[in-house]
Image 1 (cartoon, rainbow, N blue to C red):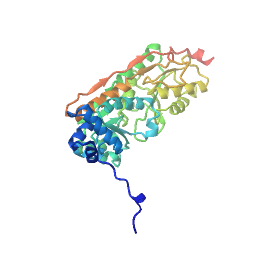
Image 2 (cartoon, one colour):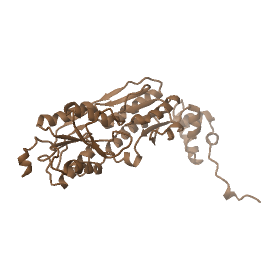
Image 3 (cartoon, rainbow, N blue to C red):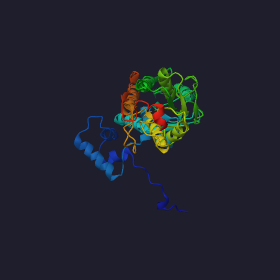
Image 4 (tube, one colour):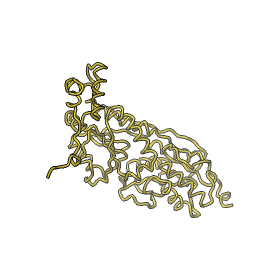
Length: 360
């Protein structure tokens, strides 16, 4: 049976056809598209006009990748589910920074999640390099896979590993500053609302347990900083950085008589949740409760409060990671970078009120 012409698959126009229509060689047409060779403006215009006539939008990226021996893709690995990761403005700021640099280098980003089971796209995805965001010890297997694949790796706020370039933040020192601020105000009964500290990601009380008993690097570093000032500090472990988790933690810590006079939250989202929990319980900020966050994020609905917090350069961390990746791909040897946070004294902290005054 004769095949109808309408059933035939359209053939993708190729560079040879464009060159023939423009009356130039294939190599000249290729240079006209790349902009990397001595092609006159008139010749380039003629090639682009021929391409428009044939509805040709450039060389096949798959073939170009094979010729270059690269995919043109940087993997960005997060442990959280993407829908959870993008609820945190710090993750968005990091990705903005990475994309700012990567886009200028002509590479794209591929977002991956990994729970440390070794069955994610890390093992097979066509990647030129990888940025690990907030990775914990459960990613060790994935790091080993990437190392065997000889893929350059950059880690943002992670435990230092051989062969992985570190982009650090002063999580411990910053948290120590926050705790000392409360100590200087006269607080002694202080609690902490932490980010997840282990693989279970289970909300639970935070006891005066060693700060080494966990896998969440950022959470543990911030806990160590608080315990540099308040060695026996306890509190509540959240299952993620969200306002909802902050509210739940705040209710657990504040809905009884022996409540703390101050709470250190390990993210601004958690801090805002704690403030909302305090308001639900009829407590005034900062008269009845002082609250400190960490991040310096812009969060809607915070007014009239100006949150006391540690402001971190999230976008700059992402840019540093992006620059390091591009330097790796260019054959260079980038250096590790360490960023510092800046203490911002807002209106959510004040000296503790006398017990008799709080009771009235």
